[in-house]
Structure formats: C-alpha cells, structure tokens
Image (cartoon, rainbow, N blue to C red):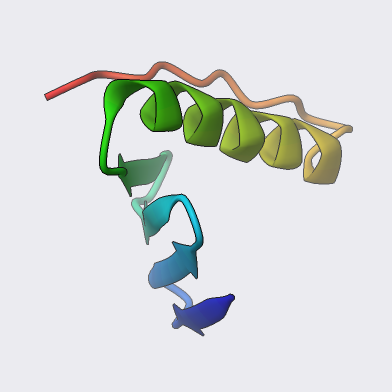
Amino acid sequence: MQVEFTPEHGRIELRSGVCVLDAEPETLVLHVETPDEATLDNLQDVVKRHLERFAWKDVPEIDWVKR
C-alpha cells in the first residue's frame, strides 16, 4: 500500500479505496473513497478497528458522514 504523510496530513492508498487523514487541533478528520457502497462500509470498519487498536488508551469517537 502506498502511504504519504506529514504531521498534519496523510493519504493511504488501499486496494479497496483511498483514506485521507487531516489533523486539526482537536480532531482527526478522515475521508474515505471507494468504488461502491459495500466497499465503503467495509473500509470504514477497517479504519475504525485500526484506530481503536492503536489508540487503546484513549478510544476515539468516530462519526462517519456520507456525502
């Protein structure tokens, strides 16, 4: 998988889609793009589980908004 990142921005290209991360002062904004709705639901679940695993001391609140 191809990954690009700076302290404020990241981009991860996965087989199922793209995940873009932007760090704001109090929030991590995630944007995922996939070819279809079923893949979107799956990628959101994968991203959520990874974030929860890496941030196990302070479990993040994740609110997905579809646009």
